[in-house]
Length: 282
Image 1 (tube, rainbow, N blue to C red):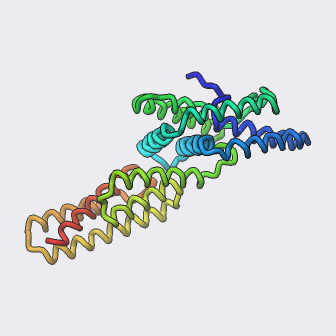
Image 2: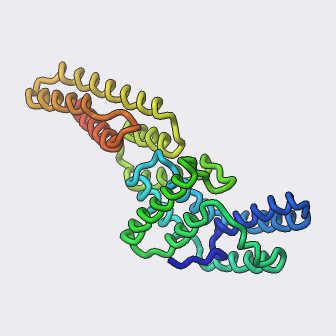
Image 3: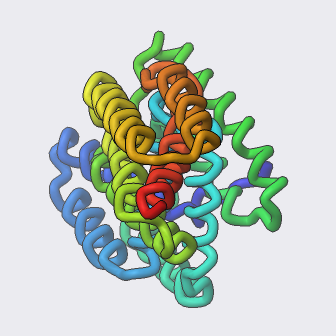
């Protein structure tokens, strides 16, 4: 995989940040100020800022141990879709001016500074050039392998891209997915939307496992009670049997976020919410 680090928005920013910190250590405040002014000038521009956010989204997603492969692929697809809408002509023009200014004011050796998670950012940069979902699925495995190497090297301590606030990236992802989900699922019941929002909040905002597990347990109990009320007030034997089956399924469903299959539990609970909504009017 080829990679041009001088065209990588995320890496250029990290090079500039490192330049600032190293310049301050070396008491070269003039150089530090030049690097700072370049960041302030270019990374306030919409196209560069949006691309950098998407880098952070994908990198932080893959570095997270709380997100499963299916969710990672979905986030990667959403990030790619969002990236595809950026004005590339304007973006390339901005990048060219940025690189020229760095070369002129700071020198080409700026790009030789050693950075943490360099290869992950390089892989994400290559991701934007893919043309199919199948190609991006391959990147899922490649990036995962790279993350495992980092974890092994750091004995389980994975360092995120410097100075990236995960909460900002997570909120950005959340906004993208909520926007997309609102476009596709306009007919969802309010209670189903609440389940999705709670789940997304857990995944992307890293809520405590126990807290989300408690939410699932309470939701299962609530739905079981609602089903029993319907069972007591309905005459159809067929529906009564169906309710019994659903209650058994709900009780058997996994409600521990630390185990696999929570996504299936949520899907089943949402389907149950829809069934209850229909049976209430019988």
